[in-house]
Image (cartoon, rainbow, N blue to C red):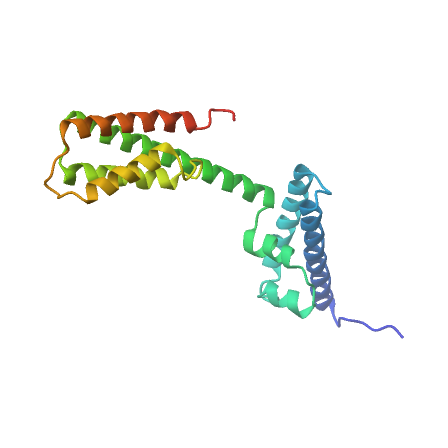
Length: 209
């Protein structure tokens, strides 16, 4: 005896759409696993993933009144496809696109921090040249420089600039706000800043590396 899942054409279309949605989620889960295990190349993965995401968006939009929650659909049919849910529902773009975006963001952020460090170095050195040697003038400049150097992950913890700025900040913290650096101290600080700046520039990766 044949058992029909539907009573009319509309119900038939609904079940067919359910089956297609089920298949897309399962296919995406397999694709994600294949990519993670290096079974498929990034280029092949991205092409197939974009197709699945496009089909999913079209179908989920069509079914939004019947299937308001993809997560509930996933749970109802006991699909066990967490990677697919993340890719289709949470992310909405292939992992390769996510990785490129993250790399670009990191590069942009690093470039901004490098520019900030350079500016803080130059400001501190110029201030000393202008004879701004009072503790309450020098301390904030060195603190800003030290903070910006600490933001840059490519610099090791024992980087010369960090070590020397930490020593100078500690030294200034023991002095009064109105106290001034002696000529010898100012000269030494300027030398340390210049030396640290040169080390900083040398530590930066060159283009293409």
